[in-house]
Amino acid sequence: YQYLTNGVIRRKIDTGMMGAMTAGAESVVVAHSLGTVVAYTLLQREGGPRNWNVPLFVTVGAPLAVNAIRNLTPGVGEVGGNRTPACVKTWFNAMDPRDVVALYPLDVEHFPLTPPDRPIENKTDVDNPTDNRHGISGYLGDPVVAKRIYDAVHG
Image (cartoon, rainbow, N blue to C red; front, side, top):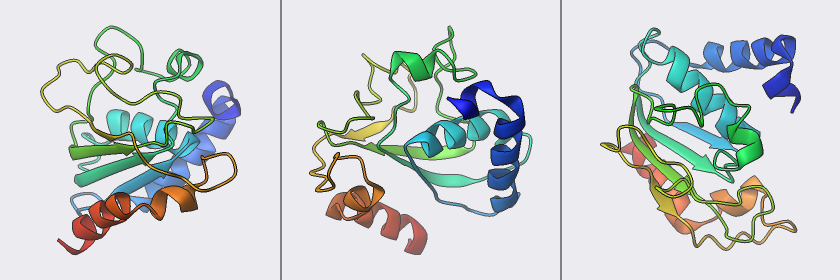
């Protein structure tokens, strides 16, 4: 809530992520929970102008399709607002259907893209063994998620 409503906090967090990206260099971006909102917002807004090159954007435990989040996230939920960021080649989203934060997949019903030319690949059967089914270790421990990240980094 603070990231989405407090400009001072948002700018501080955004500055940190922007400092981790290098213009032109291939960067695999892996984001979890609120980090998916931060990463999506920045990739959408800054990716093109800063010449970021993201062959794979991985979101896990993403609340982007939750109305309360979608309504506060700049560019999300607006007409034509949901787009795969131009700097992203492939977007892979993973969720445990029992996750207390990632309530919906990033699919046509819950997170329609405009235009729908580069759809998000959703893996909706993660068995996240953490207590609330939301912990990042449970997502990174999923063999399919881990392999996608490994292959993108070592590809």
